[in-house]
Image 1 (cartoon, rainbow, N blue to C red):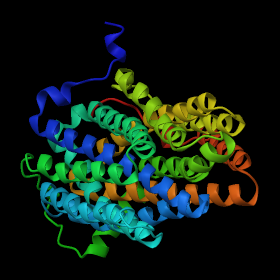
Image 2: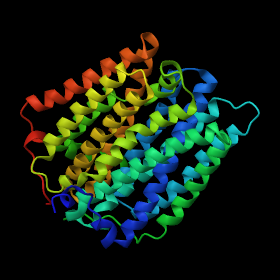
Image 3: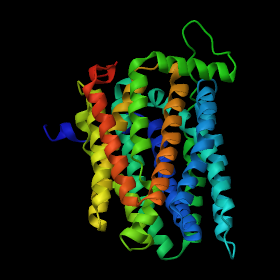
Length: 414
């Protein structure tokens, strides 16, 4: 019984057929997205030999994604969420076709990579709020923590396998073959989503919902700003991703610091997901934890310390371990944050709240990658990681030392 308490809860998969299909679609999406990010990053670094160019790739995805998340959040609270997911994941196919077509050229160009990233970021931004806001309807609010853990596991398993597979394929059959596999996975996702039932949003008590796009977005933003718990959750996550996101440095780290090739870079990209998988598999203890906010704070502190460890590593093994610890800490924090957001947000605002959450995560990650790339160029990769990791740890400690709703919030289903 004691061991079972720490194992991941499979109840949402057992009890909800619709969640099983949604889970399969999410897993396929994360798998091919992980492959795509690594393939595009390696290709871009080979063409430019610049970590800043790789960081700009992340920004090219994040900026349109941020705008699309705002639109997608409002739409998720107004129209059928299943239709929204189907439409957006179908548009994502265009992005992968551009990546593949450019790789087939005798001399691949840089600008199509960025264009494809813009289209993919926008399509993903529309679909994410719809998926997140549909989860309570698929599993019921008592199972939100278990669903968050399972979703995290799917994301991280895809994040482990995707980068490793991308590195192996690029080193073996080649970049074009890797993009072709990604295309097959992207095409399969809408097929899985078609099995979901209609998922219309629930109207708020007393009616409403007829405001314009901007007004509706502002309504969600006001709710988040007026709710101290949600505001603190957003701020602590923003601090972590802005200060301590090292992904843009990994091609340079694998090439110049470790002196290894594409397979090592793929392993580095998979390391955070490897740690996250272990954290998700052992996530049973998160069910009904009495102080979920404190867990978020500790997880952010551990995240920063892991990046400090990475700054001092000179071997693939230590680098992998540091990134794995970062991924485990991020996943624990993410599971707790996702559960708290969904528990403390009414259904008619879930789409907008999910979009706000993902917007700050996407734009914050892009900003973090960019600052890491710039500090690396001006000084060194090691110094960029050391400064970012230390700042992340201090930010988490600041939340731990001050009185706030994040420390006081109680766990358990609502």
